[in-house]
Every structure is written in structure tokens, then in C-alpha cells.
Amino acid sequence: MAWQNVSFLTDAASAEPVCDALIEVGALSACIEDADAGTPDEQPQFGEPGSLTAPGWTHSRVVALFEPEADVAALLTQAITQAGLENVPDFAVDRIEEQNWVQLTQSQFDPIRVSARLWIVPSWHESPDPQAINLILDPGMAFGTGSHPTTRLCLEWLERTIGAGDRVLDYGCGSGILAIAAARLGAAHVAGVDIDPQAVDAARANAERNGVEAVFADSTVPVAGEYDVVVANILSNPLRVLAPAICGHVRPQGGRLALSGILREQADEIIAIYAPWIALQVADVREDWVCLSGVRC
Image (spheres, rainbow, N blue to C red):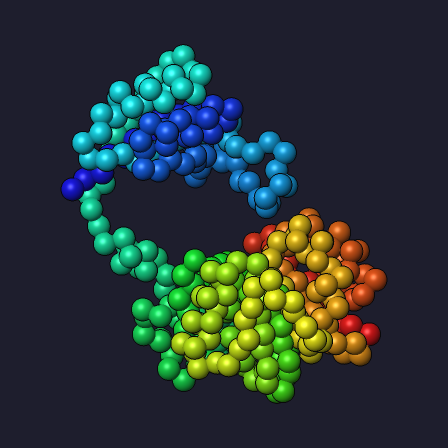
């Protein structure tokens, strides 16, 4: 069975209304892409929810998936009319054969070498180095495969920082990868919290898979106590709002804090916000993302 994949060009203002209309007329999915991706005119859009004042691409491509027997031309005409546009654009239809989508998705994640002694290994792979510290990971619905620069920055910081017996809090734990890494690196007690219950479930499953004892909870359960090490790999907006709460969990007189999910141009502002509690500095940079760290006095 082959699905029908339809694509056509439009402008930024029309792309979202057309996507919505395509879903209403029966498309299985619809998305917007940068039509100039891979060219000198590509328009990267960094940021986070609420931070973009004019999202979208000047030259947009809408891509929609339809059932094998759908009348694409008729449905596209109906969607264009519903979206308030006058003309049906030129469009292309490609056939997508049925595949093992789980297997295809898994094939995109290979083991990642973080350092000489630390690897991230998807649960469906064999470890390339059985003698290393292997973090066996199945991210599920949670952020944190280890491939994103911010996750790598935090893992490298933890490897440099964790001492035997440390108490560690992963604030915004996602898949639990940072908390699990801290435990495997020698921390005595690790905990994690996330606003997403699915992330908490994934973190618990990953901890069990790695033979790690960890306490994970969603944000309905208040985080209590002070920790020797706190790491928060989230985004700059929540980091701004949560500064008092995050710093309140860092042990006075030597507790260490690392923050990531921060773009290079956002670093100075985050440093200023956290200054009343902890003097942060740039610990490392990768691909325009920074990791900030500091010690609480």
C-alpha cells in the first residue's frame, strides 16, 4: 500500500491556514518546511515557544500525506478554497510505500561517543565499547537522545564535575539521561523532575534499564531538598522564570549548578538573572549553544 505525499509552494502567511484546511478535508498529516532549506537563502529559526515574533519562511513548502485512494486534486482544491485563497498551486505527488516505521526511526539513532569513557547507546544497539560507561537509552516520547548539543554539553560537564557521594538533581529531566549519567559517574543519590508525565515514565524506564536507582517525579510533586549538583537542560524562557526555584535547590557553600538550552546571545541575560544567587560563567559552547555553570557561595 502506497500513501500519497503532496507538496507545493506558498508564502508564509498562507502556509498555516492551508495546513489547517488540509487536515479538515482529510489529510493524515500536514507540515510546513523552508522551501530554501539547503541553499544560501535558508532561514534558520532558533528560539522557543513565544519567542518568535514573525514565525514562518518567506518561501514555504507545504507537505501533506493522504490515503492511497484519495482524490488529491479535489481535496487540495477544497482546502485552498477553505483557506480563502484563489488559485490552486502547482503540486507534486509522490508515492510512499508502506514501511516498518519503528525500524526506520531506530536506524536514525546510532551509539554516540561522549568521551573516552562515556557512551550513549540506544536500547536496540549493541555497545561499541563494553568496557565504557554505557548509558542505555530509549527516549520514547521524551527529549534527550544525547544527539542535541545541549545534552552533550551537560554530559561533558557532569563527567568533569560529579564526585563520589554527590546528591544530584536533574531539573527538567526529559528521558532521564543526565540523572542516569550522574548515577553511573558515581553520584550517591539522583533525582529528576519534569512537567511532562510521559517524560517521567520514560526516565523511570531508562533508569531501570541502566540498573540505576533514581527518584523521578512530575511537577505536581514538589521538589524538596538541597543538592550538591543541579543541572537544568531546558530553554531560556523557563530558566528565566525558574531561577529562584532552581537556585534554591543548590546547596550553599559549594553546591554546583549547570544550565543549558541557552543560545550564545542569551547567555549574558541568563547570567544576570542568576547573579543574585550564583555567579555563572560560560563553561562550554557548541554550535551556538552554551552551557553555563557556577558554584553557590
